[in-house]
Figure 1 (cartoon, rainbow, N blue to C red):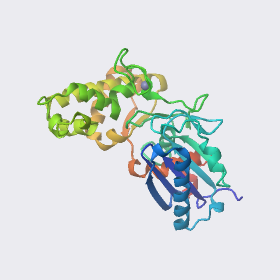
Figure 2 (tube, rainbow, N blue to C red):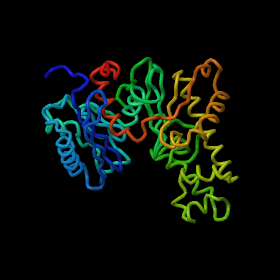
Figure 3 (tube, rainbow, N blue to C red):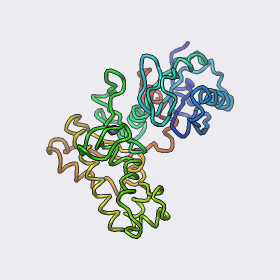
Length: 333
Ligand SMILES: [Zn+2]
């Protein structure tokens, strides 16, 4: 095979708990075709893989790229994995998929090399190479969605750790004996500040008639979400403001821990922060600064993620570029 260049085609698979995005693109990020399908995780991994392969065939046909011309296949998966086996570990978003050797299964269908990483690392790489983190050598990325994942760019490269699962920043303890986290332990950042953590805390805090949030949720505690909280904060609902401030304090505590340990130049925050930067960023900058030494905040930037809608293409592409040791700049010249 000729060495990869800007126009070499790749196949990207962004596997999430609810949807899968499959894209054919060139290494220079030009998208040729893409398609999104529901994951239907409950059907199990064999059926999931079949549907991914059917969709990949369709995407490649529309892109007019024969599978044998692909220079690489990249896959981003929603959580920790076994690097040696290329298999899923116990993923809360994909119950019943544990142990499935997805990399080997893909190798049976594609002659191109398969490159794999978890979604937090893949998104950190994507934001670093194409998005808000461009130009920073010391970058910490937090997903801020249903859970809180993290990706650490340290000294100009992704830090993976011994088992390739470093960066679980959502599972740092913020409140000993605090509420239970999805992982089963107590008081983690994810239990307090993720979408699911906020929803769980709102369910306890919001009673009928106590807040605009109750009305925004239509009187259904199951509909008390982070979006409802943000909507009520924008309407200056007192309980929402107190709750939101408390949530920012927890988040700032988690970020301050990371700043002390990692000394980043930039922290990039995804999902709810990326959608509401005006509500989050100024307060977080101030609260983090109150919690760390000045030397750490002199040049520290806290930034919203930029690739939100396009991440399904950029995340697997960034995994491939990282594996091939290529920078986007080298490919756009
Ligand atoms: Zn946890």
